[in-house]
Image (cartoon, rainbow, N blue to C red):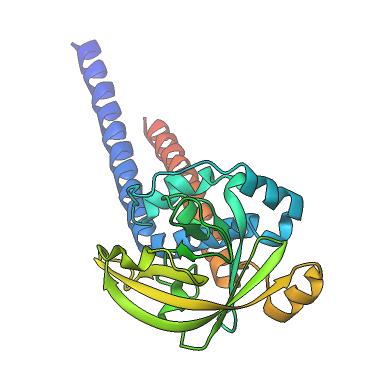
Length: 287
């Protein structure tokens, strides 16, 4: 009988320990999920800013860009694009390919300098502007680029919402610099494909959503006409004048946010294990 009571008491204590551990685990997982939900907009923007710097056009040689252009493959023009929420960013941002970078776009005065990537798809849109049609050639016809904008309106194509008529936009393949002047900005329905139509005179069309954070069927369209073409032989002069190649440098705020997120993901499980060990030790001492 005494042996039975002893076994029963031991099982009871183990059950209490297991319940305590499960309660702590559940609490910390809920806490982790809550923190991730709160911090996710800042975290995903910090990740995007860091990733953009990897594809800064200044880190590419002219030969590499031309090789990317010469070997680009056709892409599906009606591919399904997923919204850049936290999980989509995590799943896709590391799959961007260096060989998709074929140039850069610079919006003068709006501190925009982004890589141009071949093909509009979920991953490419996370780090720059993307070509919408196959066969596009800089400086010829209607050169169309699409881009996301985020909660931070300085990121990706966010500045298009504030761009004004007469602003200058530059695109380059590191061989030539094509300068366009904005002639029109309008909002259209997403099904309006007339903005993609080719033109006899060289034009640049930039496309982004009209709002961020929710699904929308409207698009902001910026139309610009070619006003100048220059040789890109003096790279340093052009970078100094227009900021070409500057990229989107991570700010102190984005770096701190990214650090806190990593600390949260790594630190909470460590704290959890530490508390479990303390509980186990106290239970052992109480026997």
